[in-house]
Image (cartoon, rainbow, N blue to C red; front, top):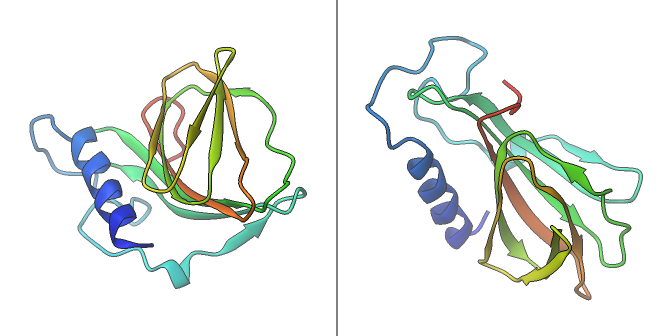
Amino acid sequence: MNIRLSLSLAMLLSCAAIRVPAQAPASADNPLASPRVFDYDQMKARTMPNGAESRVVFNGTLATGEQVGAHESMQPAGTVPPALHKIQHSEFIVVEQGTLEFNHDGKQERAGPGSVIYVAFGTNHFVRNVGYGPAKYVVIQVGGDTKK
């Protein structure tokens, strides 16, 4: 991850935890129970049928009680995008590389490197690579049905 992405990820997670500080649930299953680094080289890549790749960064619970998950995705140029889908959580999508088209509510918006897409709870949407090279982005899921 680059510096801009790391700062954006830290900022978004900090904003999600603005409530009164508490103790994160202590558990070997909660990677957010204490401070740590999530090493990119330790994230297992999963290849999708359309050629896209995904790496889970974490899924856990913040000290303030919110469920939060993050994964990095890469869509090659010309990849068929994921189907339109409705989410039951909120998402921030931080674009690292390439150009994504964010399709939602009958609209299309473009986002390039350093841009942040906000996907509200219940939004039907998909993102697709509209650039000439690969598009890399980090998805941060908050609340709702975010996996533990």
